[in-house]
Length: 231
Image 1 (spheres, rainbow, N blue to C red):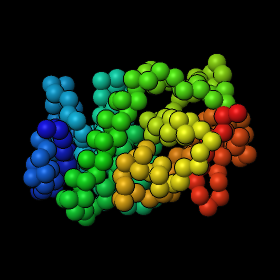
Image 2: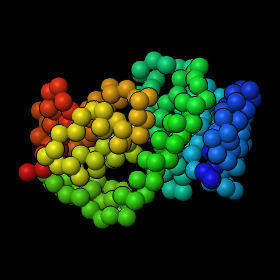
Image 3: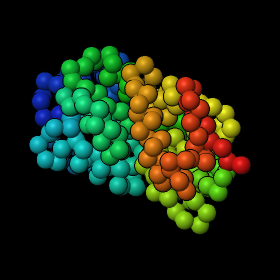
């Protein structure tokens, strides 16, 4: 039974989400402030965390950064729960390390489906980390250590940028549609927005391409999707 921590300063929302998750077979614990959540994680690590962005300090975004910066929590799936629905806010949340973004008002069944999706992605990433290295086009990805090198230079990637690069390199030469990438990398299925893929691809190109404006490795196939060309 997967354990999900739910943190929101609105107690009614905590109870609603927790009730829905338990009804779907999850174990839950709820918190109305970020510090209580962090203290609980010192005692027991959850399988996933749902965070309200707009909690009193430390807010959800701050906690997200904290968890991603710690070795023992950096792979725990994080879903941000917020009333901020603008695209720029979604991108910011994802860039800070969130695995998914749920806008209020929401349906409890949708939350449960998204939790299942991120847990599937976590399991797939754990299996992937058992592999060794992927190379191509001067790029070396070490799955076990979760590092990327361009030649001899280390490249710092976010968790999602790393997963996106791995997916493309594993399918080198093959065109992957935005929907395919959204499903396999984000695991959000029908709830996602393909523009998320475009945003992350832009950031990834800035980090590994010699000239991001004319990419050699991460190529766009107009009207279809993206492919990695490693030769």
